[in-house]
Image (cartoon, rainbow over the protein chains, first blue to last red):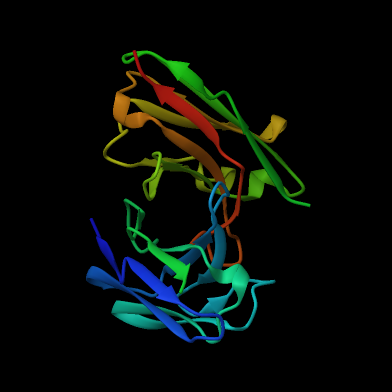
Length: 107
Length: 123
């Protein structure tokens, strides 16, 4: 199984900040990595797929990059609505797995 | 508008069974693979399993934690996905989400999610 480890697990930042979340895979994989945003009491929302492709309707301040075992999600300028929990997900092989999540809170 | 609406959650005793349903609308259901994802209270996301589309013979995949106990099926004529859960354990307590495999990503992401239904396994 491919295990995904996100860092940090918790992040405190201010509106306007640039933030980066890292997702490390336990073994090398193709770029079948997705990122999701989840707000309390809501279903997750797809942000990025194929490591760097922005899902339709997602603001361009979100971007993804990476390959092999290290992938990143960057938010270029935090907005109030971006404070949420973020998950990476690998769909390179079964079982599909998620990272443990990164909680992004307002400083 | 794409909609996924789960139902069937509730309270069940350990060892019992529960059948969740997901009613899909706003897209051609038969074209898409569909997955179930769960989230235990206060915890992260866990993939449960996948049901591929007709073109891929409706084959299924499961997480090890549910294999042999859970069965995913679909009825394309009713635009519905199902999760039959047997031999339930307390650790199966979670919100269960129905998700759609994204055609544009070759099923390599989940582009729509339902609102979730809570299944509670407790005596």
